[in-house]
Each structure stands twice: as structure tokens, then as C-alpha cells.
Image (cartoon, one colour):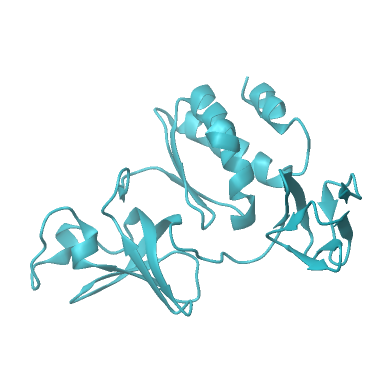
Length: 224
């Protein structure tokens, strides 16, 4: 019979979290014999049999399928270079930039210009140096005027919440359109600047207090 050995919400490297073969190590944990041990300082999350520790710090580690928000930093003959918070910019090729066919040699600034912000998805990673993006998919697009907020990437699941519950509360209370990239960048567009500021404050509050129980109710009260 397996058991969870700690009631701590925040665990540290080397801390024994669970014992027995009923539980399985996942993100931020390893198995040593029958024990599951944390390898990072982070938020403990037990999902069924899976034991996860969500790191409280650290850079963005890209994964295929991640939705990200980035900025155009270069334009080449073959497409665009997008800064997404990784060591090397990600690439957006002509064939993945639009549903329509883009001919080589056309003025690519007609589609995405320098410093413009895009919401894209990662389709391929080669040794973390080559990251391919696509804009061909539901909701993927250039993001017009709005507010950009940067948060710790590991806090993104907490900001979004289970099945989008947390971010749904912020959208409902502020009437803002909000997108959150897995790379720790959020885009907020509201009817007024005050609405956007309130949404930003809520997101930063979640980032700061991600380890607190009953956080959804606390955010609801904060937003009024």
C-alpha cells in the first residue's frame, strides 16, 4: 500500500514525498527504491497516481505542442524569427505562417513586421537550438494592441487553472480577452485600460501566491 508522506504544499530537493509502488514519479520527481523524491523546490501536486513537483523558478523549457506568445525579432527570405524566451529564437516558415500561400520574394512585413506579437504553437524541436512554430491552427494569430505580462513559466498551469477555471474567473470579472502562453507570457486586451490593469494584477497575484489553498476564491474576492 503506497502513501503520501508529507502534507507540505511546497517541497524541497531531496524531500521524500511518497512511499510504495502505488504512486508514480512525474515532473520534478524521481524514484529511489520504493520512495518518490523531489528533485526541485516547487509546488507539490498529486494527480491520481502521478506525483508532480512544479518548479517555482527556472527558465522556459519548450515542448512540442506548447502554445506560446512571442515577438518578431528578424525577417529572413524563408520566414520570421520569433523571440519566445528560449536561448535561440524560434522559426516561423512561410508555409506555417498563414492558411494562404505566401510566395517567396514578397514583402513579408505585410504579414508580420518587426516587434509585432504573435500567438503560435511549437511543432518541432531539435536539440533546443531549432524550434519550429506554426500559425496554422484554431486561435493562432497576430495579437493586436494589448497589454503584455511576463510570469514564471512554471506558474502558468496555476494561472490557467483546471480546465481553464482560474483564467476563466479573470476573464469573466474583467471582461478582458486573455491568452497565456506556456512560455510565461500573457496577452490581455480589455475594453478599458483599467480592466487590463485589474486583469494583470490578478495574474501577478496568482503567480505570487500560487502555493496558497483556496486561491480561486481569493482571486474572485480580489476582483470583486
